[in-house]
Length: 191
Image 1 (cartoon, rainbow, N blue to C red):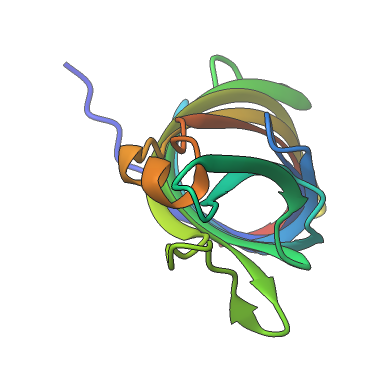
Image 2: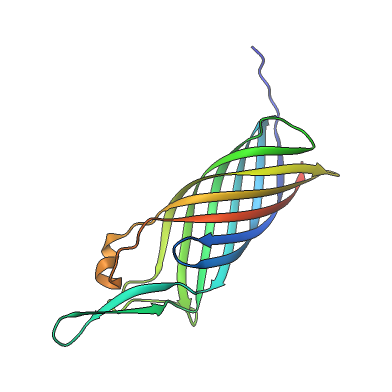
């Protein structure tokens, strides 16, 4: 039995596009990451990213009229959509070549909110358009090394466990589970 012990790490910056499917939100995102290599074909990555976009999503909301009937309307929610996410990924690199492909699985959190004038947007019934949700995802990428720098391009999809049935009373419909697509470019330095 051979025990392979290697510990090295990469730290760097990342940037890309974050798309929240179903809500018509596309946001640039920027952040930091740290990769930990425990053997040649497996590494763990801790990443944090933040993004902000003009809110273009529409939501169905309702209010009660004087006779107690629900009146539905559609409206743009807030001026901006802000998000912050943190992820712990496991990357499997099947073989090391000049440009190495890899597969990734990750567990993370997504904090998001709609804001207008610096304040979180609320519904007619007082519910706030913000949340913190768990996410589970996977993706693929390709990485290479150049003069001690690691360059990688990745594509991810995350399922966000964000269903909230309590929102029916505030927004006219439930907040369903959602999913994202994300494209990331990373530049890091090996240590």
